[in-house]
Image (cartoon, rainbow, N blue to C red; front, side, top):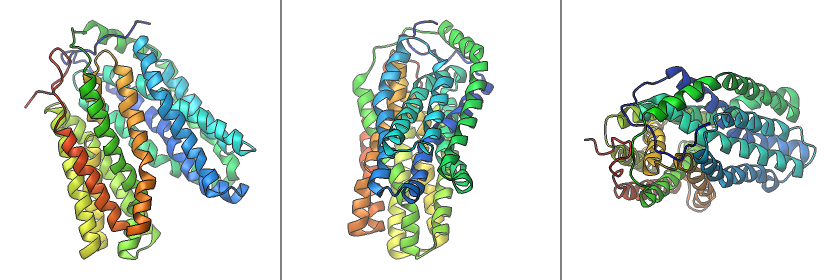
Length: 407
């Protein structure tokens, strides 16, 4: 393999491989489904093993911590040497770890399985994002948008995939989850020549890049962490909000959440397309401004004019806004660190996002003390803060492969 402590390909390396992007997007679905399978297991673990909620929740903590801690490490290793073979291996490891959680006979072994799953999920992202960039050619924003859609889809798919298995086979039903991951890993392994060709083509179109802009990158990482609090708080509490303000059913809450996530898929795709035409920083700013509008409108609607159609419409606006920048932030992070693409991908796809999830209990405490309307008022505050910080994001330095200065 060729050493990769080099800049990304230039935008005029315009050959794209849509089949390669599609392959990585589907793989991303199965990889990130592991992250949402574990929360879906908690109620079954409490019922079958008599765990307390706090004990069961340590599985989620273990998976998130292992994923967030090792993700920058895998990014650093990815920058040292091209490792496309890590992508199928990581998917297999993640699926195996998740499958073993329900089979493990004790909580310590379950925690070990969750740690393994988290490591697999983390290892997938840096090389997966690099490969997505190579496959995208000049349309890196759109390519990364498609790749990010896979993550959204996987997050939504996890509970849908595991719940019928748990109902049919009990906790041992998780063992079936190794099958889709293993099949996808085999497909990826059979396509390694495709990855090698894309990597070789990218290297032929290298250009001299500016130095890594760590100040710009850390500011972006802060924006990403704050943006992810908007996403996690919305996903966690939107159903509760719907039930609280409408006195509705859990089914109505689920519908509102599903609408938000589905609208997010469209926002991610559109954001990637726009980022290939306009200043990436402005797309991020617009994303956070729309998120602010959606969160404020939800809080006002809940307080003064609650109705199910209105809540659905505003949830769509919030989902569209927060997802508009999903792929853009990864591309911009890679451009701030053109010599550390793996680290940039691991941080923007993993660590900064996980840190956003840590804030979910804070929003829960706000809800306990002040109600669900206050939760989305706090979400609006996060959107305002992150939007303000996004205005300070610097342009990508000359020589880096960016259209960030485009009008």
